[in-house]
Length: 511
Image (tube, rainbow, N blue to C red; front, side, top):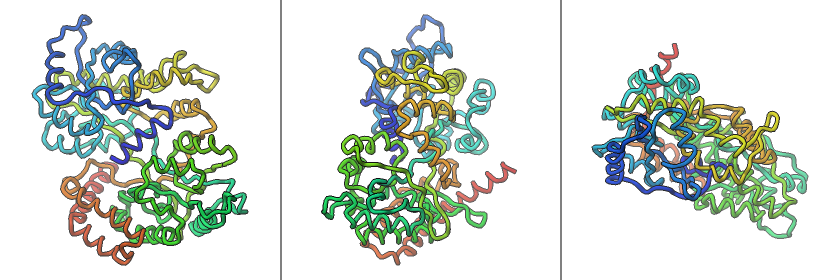
């Protein structure tokens, strides 16, 4: 859920989103709509495909809605299919999908956020295997979606979902106040020891020159947010699986995680971290950055067009620069990788329109991709040499196109660069993405959730709270090993066994 929220925030701050939740259907309302659609004559004699998708919080211009707009017309004309769209509320979206799946009139295609949801319905044999449909009707899907993503939606050798790829392969890189570094006569830090010295100076040496002890060295957020590069300095990332001696191990219970917690505890104990970090939400982060009292934080790639831009507007003399990732005592550095797959498109078993649903997704990934991603040429944007120029008023008016394009995002670096540069080259959005992508620590487990994960993950997530207590000193770091034993005893060992069974199978397929 946290990563899903970050994605929506990225849409807003990178200029890809508006506001508003659009349609409030669920349960009986879906059944009513499905029934009326089934009986509704179509003057074009085109087959009708019903799709359930997320609004992503994007708003339609006045007079338009999800079933009446130019981008839907573009999709229908390009696929020769009539579309009926249902958008449940974003809040509790996956639960609404459960209600829909329990109805007698299931849709032809559902857009799903959760791999756990997909795995659950695969086990119930409620989803259609898609291999043969893809071979016949999905050439662009097969060509443009990487094999690793297909592995992520393969269960017992069959493909059960069409993945939508995360355009941003990672999120975090560290930004710091260069004007503060210059005023204090400091160079940009490189090692963890360098970072420690800079944070100490930012906190106690009056970097803003107001004669007061009122600056924050490092800003973090709740749930250990904005900490990826510091864990990366020890070669780990929370919640990910690492390879060790030919086996996968869970990063959270490795000795390197204890070392990272010890480093953060030292910073906190010496007041170099904002003491309110356990309750800082993204809005608090923005407010504190705009106040001009923060020297360093692990930024999201899109923050240069968000809170940092707001700060520079309030204080044009400030200067923020990206730093090299901190290098730890073992020479490690980096940050977490986003899951390769962001969303999943599934077709309920026994759907009468599986072929047409695949054709729609194939069009979104192929012929229609550029238009749905960028908007209509010469209306939302126009070519200017190798670059594009965006009409921001029209861009925002047409922002709802993202509801459809996000169904199947596929890697296309040129379009990503053109689009992000058109939002303002000075924001360095594309450069930020490149810097992050060259410093990713990948999660070595990318399969569907294992049965034991479904049984134990909710309880085992309590480990994060223990880590926060260790950082603030409520729980001694010496108890880390006790928490490791608790994690193993409460299902962690069973999960590890299943993960490695998957890992061995994946390696056999590669051979």
